[in-house]
Image (tube, rainbow, N blue to C red):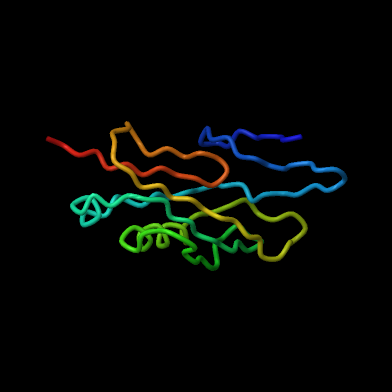
Length: 129
């Protein structure tokens, strides 16, 4: 069973999943600053998916982040922004909580970057001319 909660920003995030007798809680995104598309990456027409593993402390702050996969020209900006993400506070003072963030850089035109729960954002470069 999957329960969802509507965040103040209008985003839906997964709160908990139930599997048999086990209840697992995912950290809920409170704030997810997005990177810009690096100009050099746009010039080189670089695109790709960046996977970043983060550790979140009990207050919801990202205390460490590491790139798992993705083009280096895009990884740097994604890593910098991953460290700025904020999550909900942990229940009962739980220790570090892991999460894997996905940043997808691609060409196309959207009105604004898209956030897809639980931890994916699409960053789009819209070429002109």
